[in-house]
Length: 315
Length: 212
Image (cartoon, rainbow over all chains, first blue to last red; front, side, top):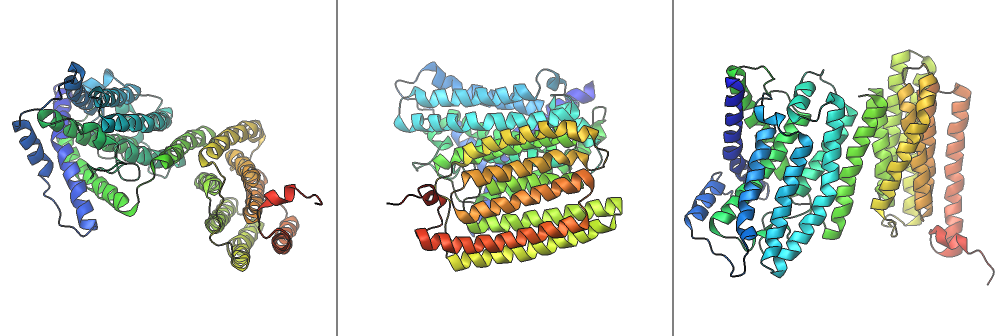
């Protein structure tokens, strides 16, 4: 019991602290790949500190929803981080919510972000919100299908149970999981405003989606929103690890020592994932917004194919 | 292993459906040929049947080397390297493709329940590949892509034969291989005829064969 709660707290702390680092690492890799001088790994932290020390400026017609949205978004990302097994799967919190509730949490965050963006009434915010909802409603079914494939294999929708089952299977290439992994990668790129769908490095473009929604935020609100975005990326990475490379996640009845072993493995996984993400972003060009449905339809296709292949071939 | 091959085959079929450019279609067709040869080889190794080895070698020679070379040469001589299918709604086609796959899986289930071969579960995928190639022939307007769809359909049939009955007798396999080869030659001649008549390889023009 004590171990489980330690695990829970440790995992939350790791998620909160490692998420900005992951973002910094991805930016650093991207800079290296593009022959630029890389920004510091700690830049996101410095940015948050700077923003937390500033005074917030609110538009005159901002409603309470606009002020509440950053806390709701950040809160749902923290709760999501508490459900996903990244270090160990003995999570007391994961009994409260399964993977479907997790998708719901992401949807809640998205909805509040879009509402807040529309709240002020600027053209950019509304535009970003609409685009975000379009991407979201296409990406969500694909994400659900990916999770269903994994939960069909382990006959449970709890992420902790899924990673427990998957880690104990023999090592082989399972076609269904391979399809699901490709689908998940596409969803990850779309949901985290990464390059084929959105460009995270821009503030002043007509094509932006995620940044357009944050234009009206300042100071601590902006810091929370950006931290939430970093957490979202970390959460998605952790879901990917739990579903597709669960080796190294401490099992249900693991002790503290195993948790300590799991930490460096998680770091290695995150380093690799960040490098791969930066590579994908450097190699691909941004899609026209009207091509995004095609991109996400491909993700949905892969996810459904994974499920069908599992049903037919049983592997 | 055979399941993995089957899954890759299915994936390649979907890639072909959503690929707009003709040259890339030939590459995908080649990849499909490689997968088919590998899966035949896997079946041969698993069952120890000698004629499957020959069959794998024949598949490799015909579908990975000869046919892609002919198709590439045809495309170059026709000058359609850069041509792309213009009116093709990829999203809708893919969703129809998904429905087709579900239909094929449902259709194959009672058959594979009766079969006793180790590869019986891949029959549904073979059927899906056939139907998807069919779908590709329906949705395409360009003559070359239709022919590639036809060849992909033959791949699906071959895979179905390999998975349901451990391959056909050698004689029939040779016959089919020859047929496919001749078909590509004849269709190549047709391409030139069509182009001379209509100045394009768009089969839309064939639908209005009226004297003016």
